[in-house]
Structure formats: structure tokens, C-alpha cells
Image (cartoon, rainbow, N blue to C red; front, side, top):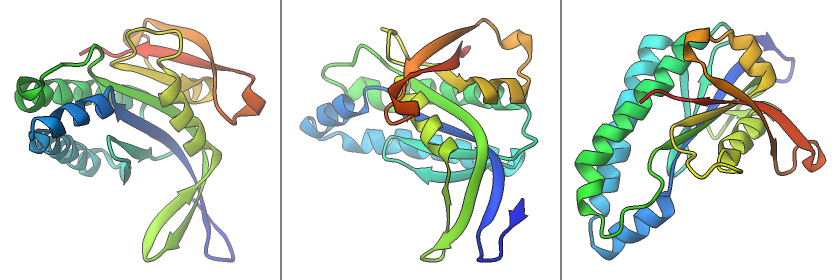
Length: 204
């Protein structure tokens, strides 16, 4: 952590974006059947899990983004612990999806699950309206990676795209393989050029 003279702080973090697949279609279905409360129950269950794990593991639950979250891990975060957390999160989602949401859907979606994007780098921390906020390229990269999993993949659920530098820095154990090096077009990143990354299927 590097303090600046104007109140800004530079911090190296591992950034995780995750998102619920098919959430727009699911919300529309639940609104039509007046069962929106079930989606709320699913989201609250996920929130309870990540808040508990944040206290235990020392990462920051930064933002809720409507159908997912942004998590910030410290510089020395263990790659093995991070992947284990993502796998546990997938299981929590699957369990509560089956309990709360699936029985109330008129038309279940073809793709069910969570997708993840991960990058690592410097973020600038500051305060706005009394709350901590962050800006930095890694937030943009992780967000774009999460959204790009479905490119050339008909079944993107329960998968994560790492930027190659973040994957290398996390030193993720070979027991989490197989992984696959892929390229994706990331909007507004490197002028739209092919971006090299690593895809991992999570064990659920």
C-alpha cells in the first residue's frame, strides 16, 4: 500500500468479478409470475456466504452490481484459496438456486450458473461520499474477462477467465487444472486486439 500526498492510496489487488448467468431472463420470468422474492432470497444467501468468507479470509466485498459482486483480494492472496472460494461459491449458488429459484420458473434458462473474471494490478483508492472507491485498469480487465467467457463457449457457466499475468502471479496449483490458454476480444481494451487469457473450469 503506497500513500499519496493528495489522499489517494495505491494498492495492488487481485480483482474478481462474478455474475449470475441468464439473470435478465430469470428476472423477467419471476416478475411475470410474481415470484421476484425468490431471486432476492438467492442473492441474500450468496451475500451471506461471501461476507462470512471475507471475514475469514481477509478479502474485501467491494460492490454489488445487480446480479453479481466485485471482490478485492490482497496482494499476497493464495491462488489455491481463491480458486477454492470460487468453487465453494458455485456450490452455494447451485444449492440455493435449486431451493429458491428453479421451482418457481415457468421457463428455466439453458445456461445456469456463475461466471468469473480475474485480473491483478494496481488500484487507486480514495473516498467519495464517505465510502471507499477504487479506480484502475484491473477493474476494467476483470469485468471484460467475466463478460467474455461466453465468446466461443456454448456452456460458460462455472468457468473463470484469468488474465495471464494474474494466473502466473497467483501460482495456482496444478491440481486445479485442466486450464486452457485462449484469446478473447475485450471491448475498449488494447484497441480490440486479441487478449491472451487462461480459462479454468471450476469443480462444482
